[in-house]
Length: 466
Image 1 (tube, rainbow, N blue to C red):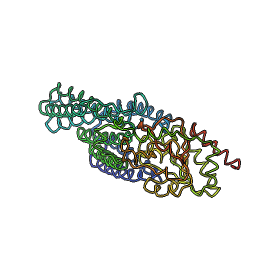
Image 2: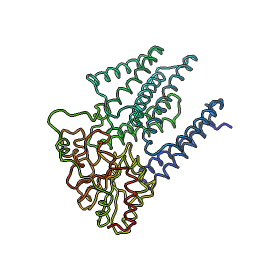
Image 3: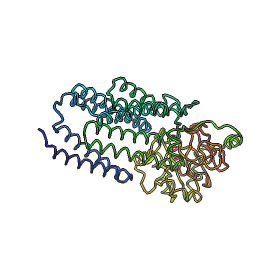
Image 4: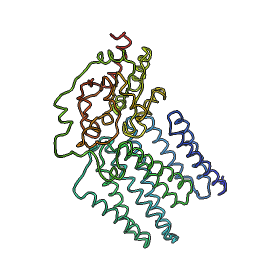
């Protein structure tokens, strides 16, 4: 069965509309499930319309590829933990980048044999190879950092920016030469240099900026897909690539604003380096030591509170403590304690990480509040319970001008009457910056696994408290 070009164009139009509606649905937790289904429906229509088009002459390799990919995707989806979702996203971005590179090279080799290349097509191939290769190697580095295969600290050296600029200029120049001359040597060189550039661009990026980098790589993968669409003459791929590219870029900009960071500085500057000069406020505060507390101490405060604000972070994700938090919330509400959850835009390892985990535990959407909404409520809260968050509640962002996170907007957890901080150890957050909140007079740390600690609180509340 083969459909006409007009029928295929209509199918692509329907798919594009569904993808736009999917993005709209994903803007809010209440409509995210519907958005996912719309996106899946759009992709199914797009695949069927492509397979039935006159461009496809044989289904053998396509069927094998689809089956192998379906098996791998199903196994990965079933096994991956939510804590590993950021690195999975990075890995998927790398696949898109490599696909763009392989499509461009394959198109060049096939068309070159047929003698049907033109300067416009050659320019498209150059763009696809450069964007795709940068996306691939950059995503591999991001995956390695998030997975803990290499250190999350920024890797910086003298002349780094000059080196990146030189590689970028050489890559573009060779891309132009390739487009004009169809030189195989230029093809090999631009591919290698683009791979190297993706690596050198991401290694100076530290852990605290990784959510922005994941979003930026998402944008890169969109542009790689769009370039592939031009190469293949597929209008829907161009549309989808542009949607992903622009949405990723906009999200990156929004996140940088939430961190009071320049997006140019994030992408090219690195983050988290040690500051030199006078002792930092963190060093002075550390001399005061910290106060530790027990589960019973926290319950004593919380069950008599009027308002408790819970701040989840990556530690909650690692411990899979969201379901225990749901039970704790319900028990406190039975005692007429108002419970709210405070979400920082870059909490966790990727945008929306905490929102997804809380939704997984069926915590009501109206209990989950973004930073700008919840910050005015911290001074009226009796207790702030910080569950594995770190950088996003660090007062150093406001008070310590020597800190690498200075100027980053934070959740005002420190302004509650009492702060209980659930931590496994005194290790700093992903950015490597010591947290001044540990040393405040109204803060007590409860050491241990977050899930075990919260389950202990639940048991204590069920037992009647004090």
